[in-house]
Each structure stands twice: as structure tokens, then as C-alpha cells.
Length: 426
Image (cartoon, rainbow, N blue to C red; front, side, top):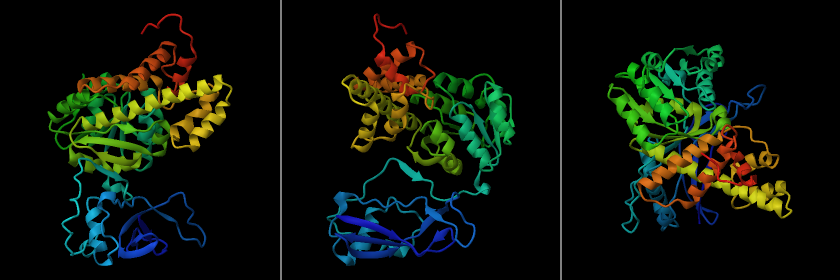
């Protein structure tokens, strides 16, 4: 078994630690050590007062070794070049050339795999000078509002719009500017983000009367972070690019709390140069970002993720109710599941409230059902059977028919409590 250990000299303040060592060992015995530069990001929550130096944390350190590539690592003479060959796709460009080694890679090693997607956690702290000069944000709902707030609090010059103007007021009080239409926002900003509830709203805000496409143009960018289907995303992209502007789809994985905490995951696709331009902004709003290639791939990834999530919640609901029916304590069920192999943050976060029949909205049930519907449509387009997701979708539809649309999606458990005399009308 190969293990990787990183050690660094303790120093009080530099943003780049040059004296970090990468140690590769087998069965506990070190077999090589080489220098590695790591970008560090100040932990703003740490105290820096008094005699104690400010604390820093490694924001990204990535070293991946494919198990099928671990050949002949017991020979110290070729360990460093082999290790670098195996992780070359992930090493940052600032790694010194001498660390890459000059020993040729043995012919029996497999070639490094190709990757269609680029992923990155926020690697360095962005400075205000790196931001686009003016950022627009369209749609200030349960997700858009905290995302825009984080941009404002980070020093960005933000201009906002929402159909219901009153939702703009808290952001205006924080320093945001206001425009009366998406067209005006896009015309006045370098980059415009849009977070809308559904495909219809996303198209209307981007392409409709006084939509963003009417005000945007060359030298500007449009980033749609809404959850929509691939066809909708491509349609919006075509309208935006027809104006000479750049387009990036960037749906997010995460709900209200991650949006508030800047811990979203961005699933992006489209124009790579725009992706690089807005990366500092994505890093403010999220903990990681993926670039997945051409437009449509980001939408597809988000639908796959939410399809799995919706199915998991439906199954979890069945388990809670079954256990309760046979006399088990539902709180203990949540605890047992949280400690086992099927543990998931969603279960431990939602479970205690579900046991009390409380469903504070973090991700509305109606949006979960919408995402399941779009995922099923995607599956149908490629003839992929998805019977579990289809069954879960029916359960969410029952929950909607009983007035639970605006509750958290964990309220789907209520649909299982209802004894239906007749099929509900949708």
C-alpha cells in the first residue's frame, strides 16, 4: 500500500510555503521525499491577536495515485519521476521542472488516463483586483440572494434585479445597485449571473422582452447558474452568443445553507475563457468547481446528482416510517444510519426534523420534483431505464398534490403517511 504524507515547516505568515515536503512511503517506510509548493489560504476564523501567529490552512492539495499505476515504487531511484508521471494531470503548473524528474518512465506502465473534465477546489485567495469590474445578479430567491450577498461582502461591485423588487432591498442596503430589468443589468455589467427557478423563467429572463440578451454584447459574459435541462441551456447560450457575448452554464450542487456559507459546487460548461474569468467569483460562492466541456454537460451532471438525491430521500422516508411502524425509535434509526456505510450528510441533517414532522425549506419540494422530471426526460432521450427515479417522482407528485410544494423536499415523507382513496389529480 502506498501512502502520501505532506509536511511543512511552521512559519507565521507567507502565502506560499516553499519548504513543503512530499513524502511517499510503502508500509510505513519512506521511500522518497521531494519538495512541493502549496498555495495556502488564510483561515479568517482563526485568531491572530496577541503573541500567537495567524493560522493558515491548506485550501487545496491534490495528489492522486491510480492503483493500477503503482508499479515498482520500492525502487527509490525512480520513485519521484514515477510519482510525478502518475499525477501529472493534477499537478499545478508552478511545480518546478526539476521535480518532474528526468528518468524515463518504464514501458510497462500504462499511459496516464485522459480526462474530459477539469475539477478544481478554490486554490488561492482571490484579490479584489482580480474580479470583473461590475457583476450582475438576476434572481434573488432562496439561492440567489445569499450567493449575491457573498459577492457583495467580498467587495464586488454588484448590480441586482428580481421580479419582486422588495427582495432586492436587503442587498441594496449592503451596497448593491439596482436596475429595473435584466436588459439593463446585462448592459451595465461585465459579467451577469442568473439564478432562476425553472427552465421557463430562465429562458424568459435571458431571451424574453427586456431580457439579458437584449442588453449584453461583445466583451461581456452571461453565467446561468439555474438548474435547467440541456436543451434549455443550449437555447439560452445560442441567444447570448449571437450578441457576441460569452456564455457559461454553471448549475450548483447545494441548497440554502451551502449557499449562505459559500460552500456550493459549480458544475460548469461552455466558454472556457469565461470560466477562467469568473473563477474568482465562483470561489467566493462555492467550495469547488468543475469544468465539464460543452454546453449541456453541466445541466446533465446537475440532473444526475439531483435524481440520485431525490431517490435517496424517498427511500430514507420509507425506512423511517417502516421502522416506526414496527416499534423502532426513529431518532435511533437516524443515528444508526448516520454511523454506517450508507451515512450521508443529507440524512443526518434532515432526519431529526423529519422525525418531528418539520420541514424548514432549504430546497423546495417542487424544485426536487421538477429536477426529477427533467432527469427522466434526459434518460428517455438516451433510452436509459430509470425505474427507481420514476417511482420517486410519483411520490413527489403526490406530496405536491397535498400542498407541500413550498416545503423542503424532505416533506416527501408525508406522501407516504397519506392513505389515498383515489389517485390524486395533477
